[in-house]
Length: 329
Length: 248
Image (tube, rainbow over all chains, first blue to last red):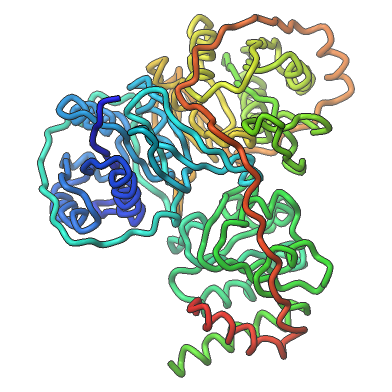
């Protein structure tokens, strides 16, 4: 097949690049090295986004195509597709990489249908064989791992957040402005409503503190919130299916096969026994810590570190100890 | 309100998954199958919309093997009016499924096409937006709140840290996230009534998949680690070990 370049979608929100934009470019770079080809990036945003776009050069983007318009302060699927089509009209591409974020998961399939090409989602590993991308992706929420390839290029790929860690490298990107009209569009994105404070999403946090039925009731979550606070700004709350189904916690926090599949650096399973569908959702965390009063709980079979005990004693002590060592260092 | 709900037969989330002898598929023997949990939410939404409007219809469509009739019967028992099985073999990729669904749905009268946000087997999470694109319909994915008035839709979809508000006119495609509603169970009366409702089976030739599975493997086993101790006294040791791994 003809060797083409790699194109990465750099996601922005409210005029700022999102961290997954750098991850998509980093993943694109990894694939491009396997293919022996350059990497380009594309993004949309309000006027001024081009300045931010230049920073993607430091993550391996050779050229960065930018469409600026006041309408692009919000996610603009139809305009994003037009920009993608415009770039594909200029160069030959072997792959298009999207982040498997809320935006990327919505946009990538639209692009695949528009281009009549295959899409592999939530990819955790990338390589190439005979000039064709090969992607590794968990299926059945990680109970099995598939290696897939593509019959036609470009291959469309979305990469799971937190897996391809953004990596700086020497080099600069060339920013190229492209005109894209915001209309026509069959849907209008009005903006994003956040709660009292915008919380870090469980799929993007590098530290996750999840609570299960052992928490005994929704009124006890202050204990976990305090641990999250002690762990710092990269930490957020997660939950087991049991507590979400009981209405103790919102669906957005659920980790597992019918919730989110997460790959944080550090995962705390607190009062979670470890049902098979939960383990599927967090088994790719780099380090798993379990705190549970039942020494036979299945969670201990996959945890790297654990404490057997009453979580209402252990968790506050843990938050205090973390604050103490942080204050010392 | 005329809705079409696309549903899929999948292994239950509690099922253990074993790789088949060919190394490219799963061994289905002894695995309990169910209606994809997110599809139940999509179906419930369609039923509520019809009930609220006091008129309309709910059609369920599935692409899959003959055994998918079971979940179509369940959908009819929950209250759907008619069911269509696009019967095929193998495990096609998302685009092949989307094309088959778009061909079927494209010829039908419909205000709303509903999906679950993803199937919990192949986790592709791509068919709803593909069908929207193929049919040139507006689309909102991963929806947790849906308001429809006079053919105009305001949907809230789950995004990182909040809800994205998106507006469009019917006809449209929506994919449902848990939390949109609480799906009902089929009633005994519903189960009896379902036996008399139409379930049409159409053999379909799917287009070749553009994504090919080279191999399917079990995930690398995680070795169980250390229980560092019992109770609050074990906390300093846990923190020391986490710092040793540069995690704190």
